[in-house]
Amino acid sequence: MSASSRPYDTGDMAERWFARRTYHPDDFDVEDLRARKAAAGLRTSVVLPSRNEAATIAEVVASVTALRGTLIDEVVVIDAGSADGTRALAAAAGATAYDEREVFPELGPGLGKGDGMWRGLSVTSGDLVVFLDTDVRNPDPRWVWSLLGPLLLDPTTQLVKGFYGRPIEMAGVLHPQGGGRVTELCARPLLNVFWSELAELVHPLAGELAARRELLESIPFCANYGVEIGMLIDAAAAVGVEAIAQVDLGTRVHRNQPLEALARMAFEITQAATQRLIRSRRMTLADGAKFPERFVQFTRAPDRSPVLVEHAVSVTERPPLRDLRGAGA
Ligand SMILES: Nc1nc2c(ncn2[C@@H]2O[C@H](COP(=O)(O)OP(=O)(O)O)[C@@H](O)[C@H]2O)c(=O)[nH]1
Ligand SMILES: [Mg+2]
Image 1 (tube, helix red, strand yellow):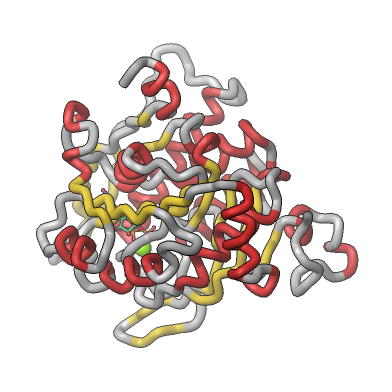
Image 2: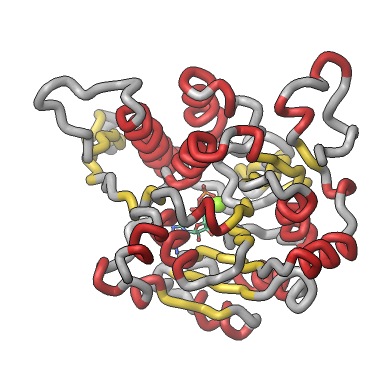
């Protein structure tokens, strides 16, 4: 079954991936989704990565536990050892809350968002897995069932990405547009150049996504913020773009990061994309060349002269969980 006709497929757009694979919450009826889930005998897990999200974690967890017993079977928060009490707040709100360092302790401390997502995936068992960011100020149970919708309606769907309006807060004022800067300035140009079949995703980096466990356990996870673009490219290679869908989640307000932090994120995304070009033999490193593990940025001294700051950047990827399980781990 394909997405309903509204409101995305007008005129000559109708044949495009964007029109065929873009869903709207109005395409779903929660009771119908619940019945489909039960009839198919599918279990669902929600994985919520967190790092110092005390301000928002309880409400995000509550937006998911609202569906427990109907559409959601398991709710896990995977926390990066937050110092602000995030984990306890998550547990009090009804999630099973892990410190990511307790999961695969032999791997040492977590290396970033992707590592957290991968460790979180490893401690859940649902056939369908939803990931949601936890720094979101307006979470909504509708996001959870909307992300599950395309998977429950269509057995050929493997991965669903959310998209939304992205307001940005500047000087305490919320502007309706202007968020998603790393998407617009880094991920979207990269996808258009090298993976044009993925250019019709509105938010390729959305942390709100759902997928079948089989797919998630068959692909590696970049340990850092490269995780989203890496997953998308690897999923498209594994199951094809027709098995990917996207769904409109309305508007999302989250913590907007400063430009220097976004630049490091953009570096990690470029790195994840480049690794995949090399792996698929579309790009080769010159003899003796090493993959960069440093990112150079500049701050300004009080006299405005540039000050060089070098950041170490990890290129670690976690292997497909399926391979670890196969090895008896
Ligand atoms: N477990 C875990 N979660 C993380 C880590 N880094 C970020 N997160 C969470 O991942 C989500 C997205 O991170 P965020 O910094 O908001 O990225 P952005 O939305 O792309 O700017 C948030 O819920 C963070 O709390 C990490 O190292 N480990
Ligand atoms: Mg965020």
